[in-house]
Length: 345
Image: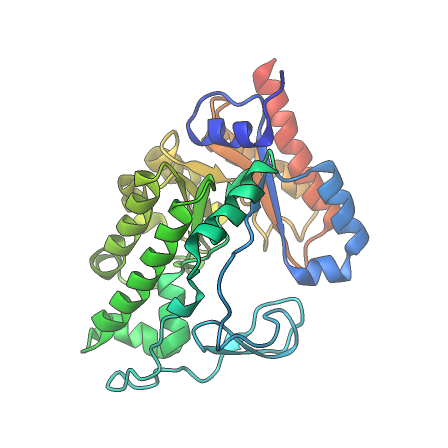
């Protein structure tokens, strides 16, 4: 009997010989809105083996607008985003904490966490029972990005360099809220919990790796330990070159990484992490998916040469952005299937 999508993913993450490569295609609303037929065709041929549970949170007193619509969006923390590109994410122009001396804008959204926890857990568990896919929690902890949203990116970078008073206070408040949120999801039947922070430029980590290890590694340790204590898989997304901290993430026991491996040295990545965590494949969105199908074939074969193992450890995955060529995306996914078939013959 063929394995269910949930079984395929779980076996992939534990290197327990899945029947096939798992699949997950992400898409920005900008792509979906501008190319609905292409999006439907891709998803029909390559349905996802995972999905995200709806968040049964209580109402927010801050939330307003649509994060992907042109105009102003206010999130649950009260951070105000300005968006000039529909279908994309906006930017924070005016931070809530412009000066470190005044933390009045620091208000973690504890009001979201369900007061009727039993009913909320039952709602999530029902969702999990009614699908055969691998289910991620409907939350998105992002400590570094949240710090930037609260302080502004330029201020945040200076804070990491100067380490002035109240930097640790802000990080502690962010961490405490996210741990509480993760603890709620750990009481449910979801399979995994995902968090994200874009840590790299195209060349290197955005901050000194030593500072990352001092300030942020303990935060991620709390996240991952909380997941593992409840039998959940821990998933992390980061854009950019994060070679400098990849050994740390392996050490922490991260199960799944959705990283921009196209801007990293694949030989080094394989040496550090192959067989230790699962890669959500990630096809280069700048230099491959915007180009010809042949570029996709070449890229997939190179990644496969370094990271593929039929026992597990890789998922065929890509993100459909507004500039992506649909045929190139399809070619990449088909090439992954070809790699997998050849290995299993």
